[in-house]
Length: 337
Image (cartoon, rainbow, N blue to C red; front, side, top):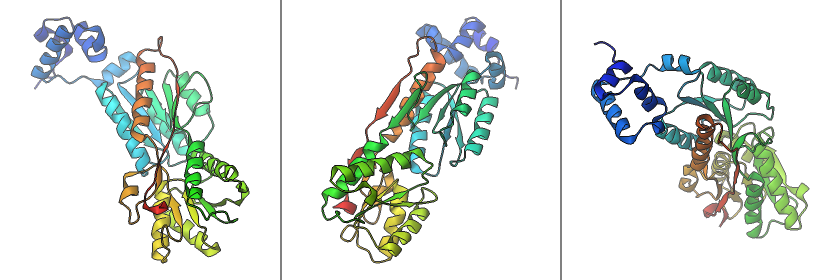
């Protein structure tokens, strides 16, 4: 069967090829009745646009990139769902890249996205070096930071206040009482090269200070990764040095690993140790002891970041850069009651 062309669609709909092109690429410029007629002709003829040809003509494609630091973390899976939903609604496809926290891998992934002529990139950066993102912007590729604040006014960013989250988490643990000792509260962190881990620790220290305790008394265990397996190892280290009365973990996967190790060792949660996670992933409420956590608007992060990115791509002259900071929400469950 011969490939259906734009000219074929135009002839069926009784419009010019330029009008068909506008329906495909700039539908808002076409009157609704005309657009419906063209869309009906597309369906009737089974027209499929030639993506590579349109990319060459326009210099970019109807795709955006999403670069995250750990796609195995349900937090980023939910972010990606928000991104994909908005992109699909607006006629874009999403190319996903997982840096695994490696700046080198992130650099390679961004190079591939640039080669694919993506319109823009959503990124949770694996480091604080802005040069990689500046190179994308120099190529005309818009960039929006996701789960990371912006440090410049000419860039959009959507993030959550991690200092406030750490502060609220430890304040909640302290409110249970009995955590005034020097080793009363421990913080199980992911790698301290990760901004979120550093800021949640800072918030935890602020909560101790606000309660009249020495912030330096916070016991910090740095896990090699933010996974359940790493959480189990961290729990073993805590038990070897003497259990604290409360443990705050930098994310729910770490907390679930800590919980598993504690229960296996016969430690009662929360009677012996209160346990707090972060992110409020789906598994938090379904664990053997339901996990208290700091809830983030994860899906909304993805949606809003994508709306900002595509607005910048499609309306560069009118686009206003925004820095949006959400506040996390404490969800108390069995593990701290």
